[in-house]
Structures are given as structure tokens and as C-alpha cells.
Length: 81
Image (cartoon, rainbow, N blue to C red; front, top):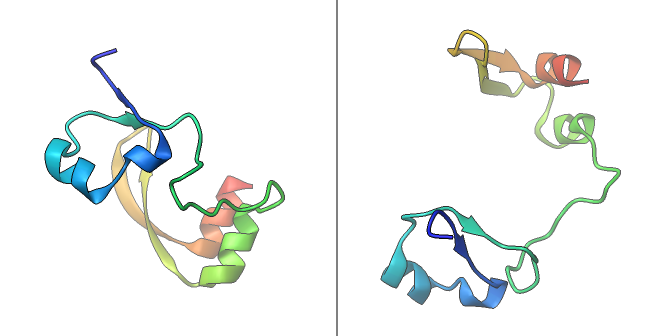
């Protein structure tokens, strides 16, 4: 499809970026070759809170009103869970 660019991990290089840029969304069907580390299936939002701290301020958006606001990590975890 012309709407998205499909790539394999090893194809996504600095040279590719310089030639093509990010003019379309890129779809990777396999993370192999991207150098990504993905958290385990057991990793939860509360684990993020432990990593960054409950007082961390986040920029969030109310999707119904499209209003931007700030929320503490602690409050966001309560909302999310």
C-alpha cells in the first residue's frame, strides 16, 4: 500500500532515513534487527511508576474534550488501572 512503508528491521538504517525520511508511517511486522528491548508481558503501568516515581508530572489529554492537562504519575496509574 502507498499509505505505509513496510520494512524489515535491518533495512531501517540511518542511510535509509537520510534517503527516505519519515514521510509515511513505517510498519515492522517483526522487531528482529531493530535493537529493541521489550518489557515482559507482566510489566504493568504500576511498574512504570516505580521506575520514574509517583510524583513525576505527565502531560495528558482528555480525549473527549481534547483539553491538555498535567497529572502526576500516581494519579495517572489510578486512572489507568
